[in-house]
Image 1 (tube, rainbow, N blue to C red):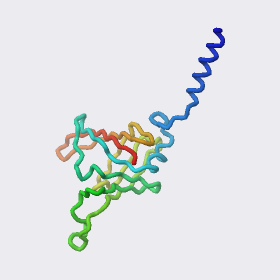
Image 2 (image 1 turned 135 degrees about the horizontal axis):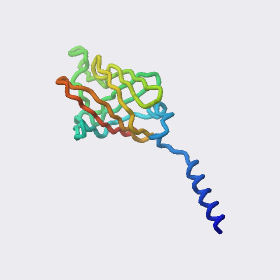
Image 3 (image 1 turned 90 degrees about the vertical axis):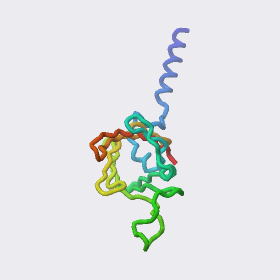
Image 4 (image 1 turned 180 degrees about the vertical axis):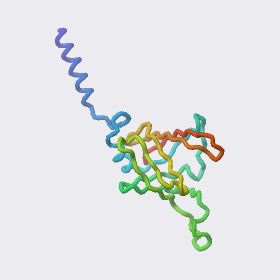
Amino acid sequence: MKHFLFLALITIMALGACKKRSNVNGDIKNRREILVSRNWQMVSRLDNGQYSEIKDCQKDNYFVFEDNGLGRWEEGANNCFDTASGGSENPTPATYTSFTWSMSGDQRDLHLKDFEKDGRDPEWMIVNMDYNSMDIRWSEFDSTGYLHTFNMKFKAL
């Protein structure tokens, strides 16, 4: 009887170890695939541990990461732009902000280039990621030299 219980326990443990995980928090080899297979909408943001409100016009925005290293921050129906950069010649509001992106070789960091304005190149650390959600941490100094550390949560669309 002891041998039967021992064998049953070993079998259960072996089957549990073979179970395929869709969550890649610890297994990061396919983060790039996950990133480009979904659009990502920010659902919360903390600034130095304090809740940081997302502007109303940004709540329906989402990130698109294309496989070729191009990206867009798409405006939702509630557009943050009054007019496109063309001014009075082009009164149609802009529908996205473009950027380029790359991922570090170990797929732990996401680099954005010229995001929102020239020279703004945030480096996001991917804290957790699966096909449904992504947690990002990044830091930047403001114009007064104060360091802000942001923790952002995204949901996959």
